[in-house]
Length: 117
Image 1 (cartoon, rainbow, N blue to C red):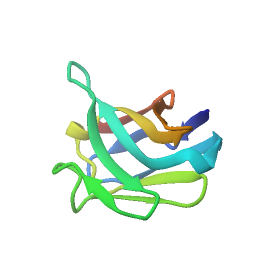
Image 2 (tube, rainbow, N blue to C red; image 1 turned 180 degrees about the horizontal axis):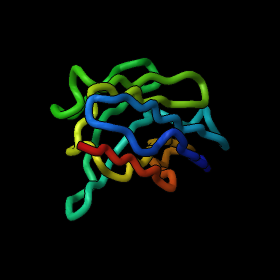
Image 3 (cartoon, rainbow, N blue to C red; image 1 turned 120 degrees about the vertical axis):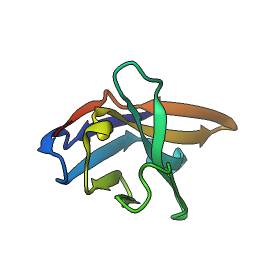
């Protein structure tokens, strides 16, 4: 199993920056990819960015050129620059693992990001 704990959310003014962190514990070697999703009020949860164990990244169009995802062995980061009010959401860390042939999806508890205009 994999456990995820996010940190780094908060309140920031439009145009500001935040860095989210997600620390993974458990069977780290089973993780194939990690990423960040978000759910804004009244909207569905959506992918923000993801990174595979070999470093391939994928970004939502809204995150390209503003957000950067990176990771080390146990932690995935999301550097968010030029934030705007539309980025206000609960951000969830995600990990996709594979163990004994079974694929599993893991989620953190979420961290609130609020961008004021």
